[in-house]
Image (tube, rainbow, N blue to C red; front, side, top):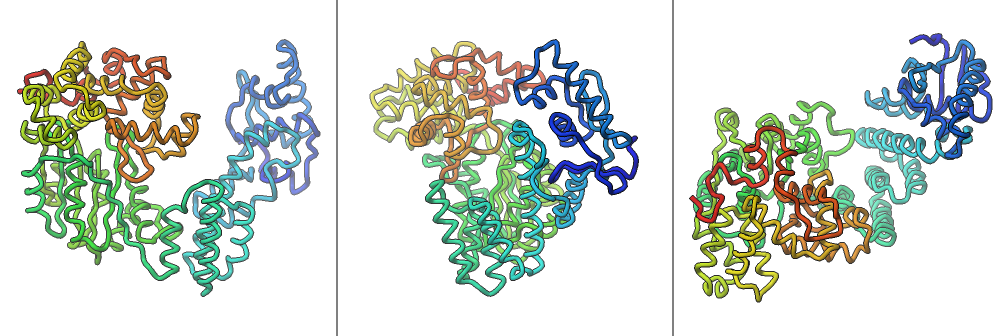
Length: 602
């Protein structure tokens, strides 16, 4: 870097430039806005257009005058800074060329990343660029930095709590909860600090205050970490119970359940895979059903994580942080490095009898850090891949799933529709089973379509599916017929939810995304769950199966978010998938390699 080593720049408080400890006068007005804007983006190019927009707060001079006027501001600022000048010209814009050690913002971030939270916070002297007159800067740039500071502050407090310094933190945390009354993390730390200080009565009062405030202002209950802390204050240690709900209409798989029961011994790892990586074959449903059946053998905890192995794989370190948090190990007590975090996790569960369900795993490398070592623990892993390495090294027992036999497929339809309705149309049932190819997801969606219309003959449903098929795979045709029956608002919500990131979505998030009244969005979500187009595996959290998410994303790109009847050609889905057409078709249909597409399943 080119600036003198005795120059320092400050934006975490009033804007300052110091040379040899002596303030350098920065002209008021747009010179200060320009310098602050560049320093808040250290060593990053900022275009002329963006600078003009910010310096004139959305009311710039005429197009032909704006660049020249900006140049005049730059010249004036450079002249004022003299040897402390850090403004460099780049093609089409400017940047602040600063040594990271000479800017308080970059020093703050470096120290925070190194775990030196108190030293990092010492760089804050007040509000961000507090003496710079720019509505745009204080509206757009300052809030994210304030959030950074609050996060680091919380980590510093957490580290102090881990050292048993709760009594000394009470007054500070009372101030923080007063300044940020809905920031649940500070309230949890206050409860913990009071508990450490031997003031459990005050800790319970603090918990009740935030519980009542959340209920009154947001209509929600405290999060699980705060509820667990409350239980510890009351002397009741929370045992994690994280298993997803068992699908209401689960049927069949007797042979696979019997095999799982035979290998359910302490320390065994059970890998459930699908033939050829088939999606929608019922891996999660089988795992959840069996895990609930044997849950009483694991009184010390039931852990679950969706590893999102298909599109956005979960970071094992983040999963471990969640598992440790479920046992009360949080904040500064959680190591930063993955090996150390995994070792602590193994230590925590070593003497416990815990069942761990790892759903939708990507590969062995993602799973291995999440395996407990205690003989009283059992792990169930579901994946589209064969985990040969896990079988060889960890002694995992593979249980592979294929399409449901016809008898089990009929049992699935019976669970949805009732024995009388299924028995009334045996030939139509046989055709429907064949059309769905023994795929539990397709059967559930098709059955929910019939269940939602008691007057619909199953033969008519088969005709409807066949008509919708065209150039689609059979699975897409099943989805399409159910999607076409949705009301416009619910169909629009389905499209909106498809492209969202993350493993699931809450009612509040769906409401913010949709824009309708909360009660109306809840009704739409329940409609999608009844149609098996969404799953509610935990109360208030809604998620897609991967195939349905792909279908929802495709519908979201149809260009008509308000219509339930617009559907695209499946070729659009194929163009989005890397690799050859056969791989792409398998992602959407999950059928072709098993020879189960077509009305006569092979």
